Image 1 (tube, one colour):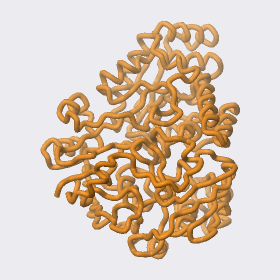
Image 2 (cartoon, helix red, strand yellow; image 1 turned 90 degrees about the vertical axis):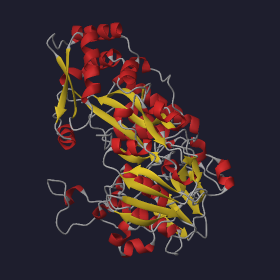
Image 3 (cartoon, one colour; image 1 turned 180 degrees about the vertical axis):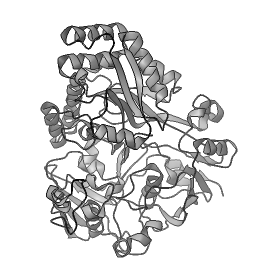
Image 4 (cartoon, helix red, strand yellow; image 1 turned 180 degrees about the horizontal axis):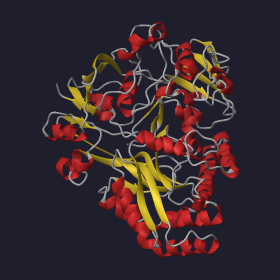
Length: 559
């Protein structure tokens, strides 16, 4: 099972540009020569899969649906290949205090049904996404907006299973923090200052919706009415989503091809073989069976680049062997016992990169020199010394066996076995894979605090910011904090970074927050996961972006 992806971004963004996105032109920045030469007419074929959910922006939180959503809709900003935020519909996004934001959109844009895209289109879409009874997957992205709690069920409105009691409704249907000023302007008031709020606005949760959606959401789901570079011409479920250029799109992401067919594959090996056989233009994911061969087979057409995914093993606070000062030493010892470089090379053939921090090297502000990250350096002698020191403080005994839990319905045992070999060799203790039959069972065990040792974790960023790798996972009470970790100093540093008006100060605060994590080790970073893909000889100008997806609009193919 891949790490949970709360879809959005990664990339070497510039925080300063997100704090004030003003109306400067700016193209895609990816391949100006392709743009100048004009669009080609060929339809590109792309490996995809059947989306899990209807193509509604606030409902789509998985990669098969997101590739369609990001090309059918245009939001306030988009992220270029490097993760730089670029204005799409936004004229400006401004704030004096990082708490109240004034958003001005460009006039004259239309949805593909001919209705105008206005400030109301954004406010209505955001309120719909946040409203609890609508049960949208991405509702949590609106949590920073003032009034979010009012559009969700209160604790006393839920039964013991967390479901709304019959007849109960939230206190409000709209968030008080959203105000329409005019057709081209609206304001957003947050519950606290958030310096990276504008960076998030390229994510699909924040796309606008036309009035037709609210009239008939079910009809909209199969053939969405968007405002992006493509429109959905046809969707044959479990077969293909046919995207064709939207001639009325007014932004910088104009299609340079005759369209894109997103083909629903169920096996990565089949897609890769179709690519090799000239029957497919772009493969998003190279199968593990081809990790050792695809770069030789594809040559310059192979993609193997850093992306926004980090893999970790997390440490539950309730496991007694890892509590207190001795527990911290054991966490450090395990980390330093792991030969990340060897594992990423021998198992993953270089498609993973040893972690140096808790975030991602494709995020601006990332550093491989965060104070405290020496605990990620392979040093078996130091690891043994730390383990022995912990034993002198609070012994667990020579028959202790470390267990690393994960789901068994995906390929995780290989790397767990490799990590355990390192641990057994360096520390002289037992170590074994603790499998759960299915991903759901694994998640239930985590939620119910039943894990007996460490457990696998992974994160792919929602938007290109350091804070997105930190707060949602390690903040006190955060939704993805499955370890029960809490550190008031860490929380304070996050708040300091979120409220900073100076980008450098924000980055500094997030790096200091990471130093606190290295002192506590609630998670043990393992490696960054690369985007691995490839393309055929029939297409040109293929670039994979910050989110590991191909940037479809700039691909050219002769008809």
